[in-house]
Length: 167
Image 1: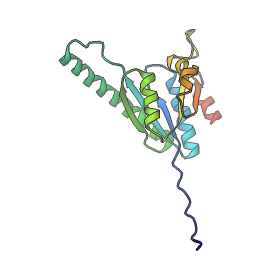
Image 2 (image 1 turned 90 degrees about the vertical axis):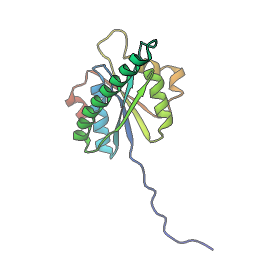
Image 3 (image 1 turned 60 degrees about the vertical axis):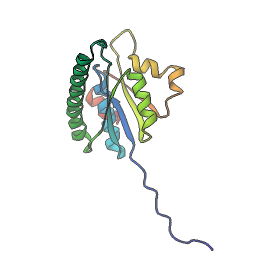
Image 4 (image 1 turned 180 degrees about the horizontal axis):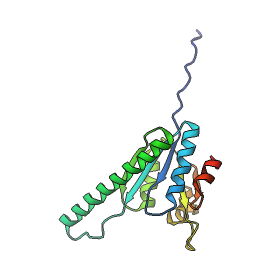
């Protein structure tokens, strides 16, 4: 017996463009690029902020207060950036806050969240030390093998106009 019922089209999930929000200048270029790509492809943005572990580990109560303050600051920062993303894309981004080493937390998030489609990072174009520690690590043969999604590197010195023209 043959089933002649029409197939229902499979609903494609939107592409999720992940941007790491950190203390560098170049993450803003990555954010603009990711937002424009999301806007033009029907995708969505995602933001990751990684809180570095506290240096004070001998004093439990003080460490807890510092951790709580750092988390509160991270939440406030991501809320401000989320408003920018919403203005650029018309969608509310997915927010992720992690604590630990940035590269480890980034790779763990990508492994845990199959919906993340593209990682967009901004490259430092000013420092002679290179494009930045995350990019240096992720483009090493050891780390690139662990990355299951494309990595887009945006030069941090691109202007808004240049990014808009590219996307």
